[in-house]
Length: 509
Image (cartoon, rainbow, N blue to C red; front, side, top):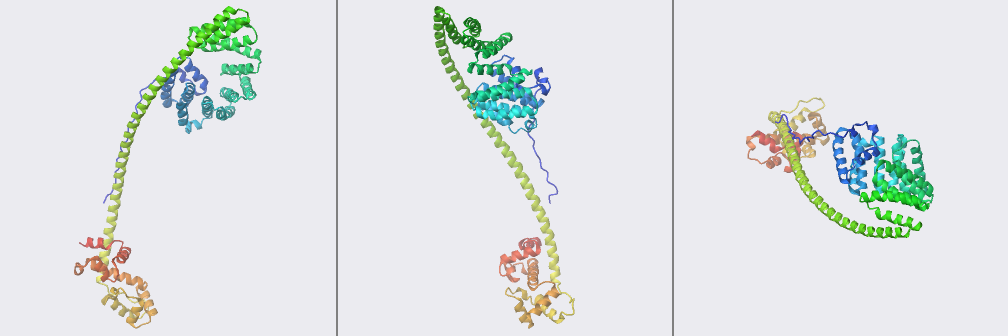
């Protein structure tokens, strides 16, 4: 018998991570953080797009264990940067991982930024209508928690999504709400809001308003030495001055922007030459206009050739990168498949061991029970050998009839007749069938059918352990004790004794 089962569970590995330090920026309180501030933090590093994304991923790895709240904010920023670098597939995969995060769902601010990020992703995929759904959710959440920065960002996003659907008046409505927050001192996203409003006024031919806004943005970019914004705003402001016929101002601003563009090897130089040529032409300086136009066309062609060469190079690099990624994926899949097979093998072995032990336990429990039942049945055999019948408990029962019945049952063993019925017994006794039935019920405490079956089982049980019947097969004993076939005998024996005839016989040996 198994008294106890010991299961050995082998536990897998523990990942060890070396301590890593984070920039002091991430040591601020949670309330300090927004996607705007985290994005600016990475922009100030002045790294390439790829280097920035590597840094963001590195910081996420550390933050995940240190502060899950800031980790999620950093991941939202990472998704934003990925979508800006046209890696939409990876950005979408990261967002899907976060979709059912319980921590995210328990923090309203994080939920707001999640909707904001998802909206931006759809917008970058050129689905402004889908993006608008999530921007609206973000607006509702940030309004509810009174987060003015998040609210302003998503009002601007709502304006952009309406603008992309040529709903300019609706776009202006949202820009105006964002402008109201800006005027109250919420200066985050100021440049983006001003640029959108200026573009709206320019489209509506409100050139003076557009010019005023572009001037503010231009001087701000100059002061902050943001070269890219400086160049773009110089072009926009130069265009405004040109439309206002302020050609001298336009030339001054355009030349300033051109110098920065040339120094930074930017692609905007042909555009500056084109606008400058137009300005000189309006002033009657045709020679300067002609030279600049030729230079613009020449640079345009060179720029076009350079763009084609860069594009081909980029395609080659992309192709090589894709091949490398595919090779890595195949290798990783092979490793993961091998690990999975090993895990399944371990699980199968452990499960098989548990199942085997359980089966053994049940087997020995059953064996113990059968042994006890066998002992009880051996005692019943002894009682059967010494059977003398029961005493009459009622004066109404005929003692003479009982004696005659017991002689037939215990001496003549008429129950061995497989065709024996109550009617047949009554005819042998030459007594009314009903009276015989009542007498058996009263004396034996059971019906004729039950008593008959018990007598046959007692007889069979005796035969199974008796040396006299050792040469009998179990089927022979079944027929001899009054059963018509082995099958009905096995069922009746198991029901009466709890064990099978073969097991009972084997225990006797």
